[in-house]
Length: 187
Image (cartoon, rainbow, N blue to C red; front, side, top):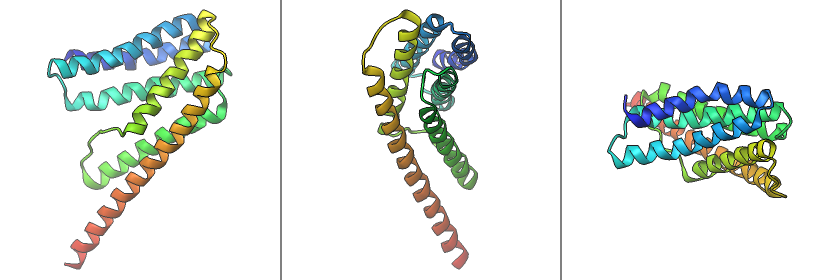
């Protein structure tokens, strides 16, 4: 196991701690842990590329770590009233659709490559910024004015757009598979 993959696994292991901290109103500690996780996300990618340690496992672990941290943090923050429930539902539903599409594609083709689209990267960054803002505001007493409202809107829009784009991508792939199967059956 190389260093970037170990860092991704550490982020996954931090998820239950972050949830516990948020639910138990330990927002300062949750802020610092999420901030370290965000920095480690950038670090593991940089290390993997710089030292040529990019692996297939890392291609799966990194987005799993990101999504686990963000989805679980959003659920905990929604539960505690820091985020609107409709936004939490949108974020969780989008990720469920993406995972469902990826699993379906893998089951149909026995192959899957993890390559996030740009709007998805923007969405992940926006989700992370909003989570850090909430934790900084609640844990450190920092005031960001209307920034939270702007970020909620940005997360909502990028969640809907990226979810729709993934639905189109998975639908096209499913049609291609069905067309190929139909052609093979006709031959």
